Image (cartoon, rainbow, N blue to C red):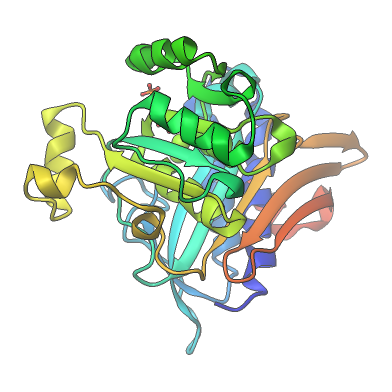
Length: 328
Ligand code: VTB
Ligand code: MG
Ligand code: MG
């Protein structure tokens, strides 16, 4: 993929974030999500790519835009064929309540390189570069904590595990506490949580939990670019979710519950990941309106091929940006 696509992807997440932030604290996650989707879709249409949405807002009948299978770009001849995974507003509840860490996210890879994950839950474990190769989702939580603490040269007591605050994680939490590690609970947004493991400044060493499978693929693109590691196992919670797995060709339990390594989630090194903060977060500041029609955004964009990570701080003149005028 052309490396300049990285910058283009930042425009896409910036637009989604700028479109969504007006819904902060309004208690309406559906309207906020719709604004983010509209913004992202408009920004995508100007890209020189021929993309297929493989992780999106749902099936065609339930999502009018950025649905799975939708083509984006594809106007010009000779543009690269890519797979796209989007979550225009990752953390709809966060924005509805004005809580931290709502982000707009996108991942991109050459056609066929992003797992077509069903809309089910996924059991995930993620770590930063120093613990790459040391995790094993099939081993116990304690075994993973020991392995990661050794890799990071830290005592278990000094290890911080980030876990989504859900009853389904009660056993994980019990085991982490028994092992003596610290826990950081978060209410929503496990893409941001997984990425936090890749940046030492966040103080987060490992993410463990069961969250969205689509979010798992998006986070995997970031971890790949950062040189971190991640594993997942699909975790359908209802007969409907098992059915969704079957529709994607996962016929028996062996297929469904297979351990997905980082390379199964995102194939090869050529991947891009971009995120823009919507509400203030641990890694990215949220959108800040400065008055006089100016808004500031904070984004991160990563390229798997080179491992370059760029933080992009941008000042937008809202009255001069056509796309934004259309979506605001
Ligand atoms: C997960 C997680 C997401 O929603 O999908 C979660 O991956 C849904 O879990 O980051 P619940 O059904 O328990 O709410 C997010 O937190 C936000 O989309
Ligand atoms: Mg979404
Ligand atoms: Mg989400």
